[in-house]
Image (cartoon, rainbow, N blue to C red; front, side):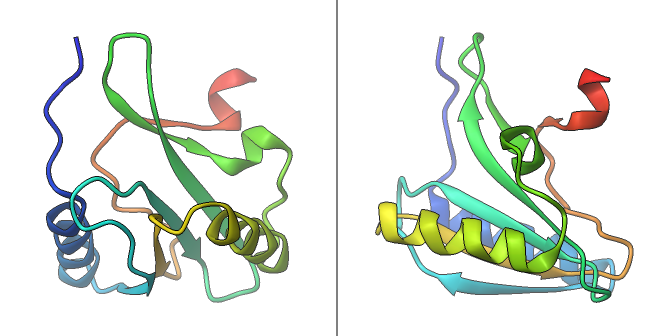
Length: 119
């Protein structure tokens, strides 16, 4: 069964607030559909590295995020930026957020799939 989802704009505001409370910065690079747009989260570590996280629905109908490294994207910021650029061209309803955090924290509260889990 699909779980109820917050409107995208509200989810985005909550993520921005979580980042700010922890001393990081979060910027909206692209506004998507206010109610149902997916959100791509880029996390820059301010040292040239970055990660990207994209939403998907798991088998239980719950929203989770996947680290784009699972798709073969590296963790250099320019590689993540290229992925983000392609995603923006594909989906005009997409929200794109950039978190700047020296510790590389994403501030997502949903489960996150990462390459470390598959090793």
